[in-house]
Image 1 (cartoon, rainbow, N blue to C red):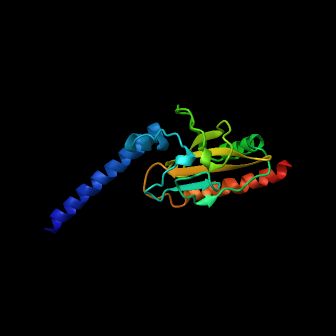
Image 2: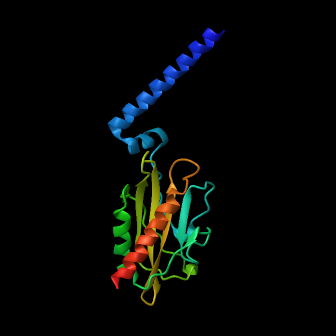
Image 3: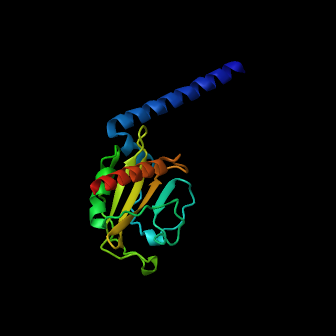
Length: 194
């Protein structure tokens, strides 16, 4: 009886070792990030309309939004207001985001951006919205990040950032921490821009 259990356990460990080896070979050939797309499907191609953003059923996202802009979903943190115009804030934000390790523009083709709804109470300027793919440090799991710069009038502006994990139920605070670090860096850069 024990021999059968030992043989079965060895057989199971052999299959597990072969599976891990096969996965390691695939990752070495096509890269960690592409491996997840092959195994679980490519990240969804979506156009985010912050005013119409619906709540998610998984706690694997983080939403930074100004009061009154994300009408259908409660934000996780309110966006700061910057005393510079949107045209001046945009390059600061993009420079900080794009300098982050593991973050790259998501240049997949999307439908035209929707303008914010009139009830949001914010100026409907031409869309200053960009999409990014941010990969986690070690396993390179992809997160999708959408950011939008919003002109609030009188030479001031704000932003909305929506980060969400593509795979899994939880993101262990990765999106929240990434966005918090960006906001801290943006506040320093804006203060030094004067």
